View (cartoon, rainbow, N blue to C red):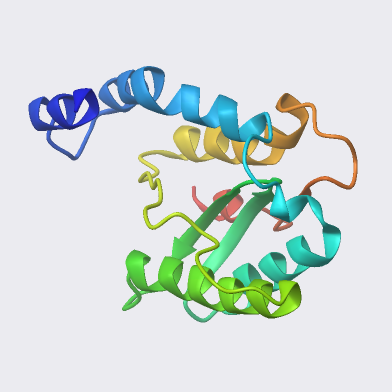
Length: 164
């Protein structure tokens, strides 16, 4: 209720300052819980996180260009650029649908793997992009995850190096 009221008072698109306020009020607590590994921790298993990694990179270059990603035990961070004529919601749906099917097959399970919603943000400047990339790639260290409980992947050279 509080979050809905706040969003009503702050219509998108948001400035960096408004986005920072939203993160402080609503996102940081959730990220702290996720980073602490609260939840099933399904992706702590290297075999399962590999399925997600393969899913995330499958259409790299055709539907999007992946720059960096971190697969945490309970969630995933990605930084990518859409290729023209592809929609964010279609790309995210593809990732979630395919990986959930493969994960459920591996686990001999059924049902939801991912939350219905996702958090996205538009990169507004090269500086914002570099900060976001650093956040994605250092997220496992900030969460103090032991080696083997996460995966990171990054494009070399970074996509941001192409922006002048």
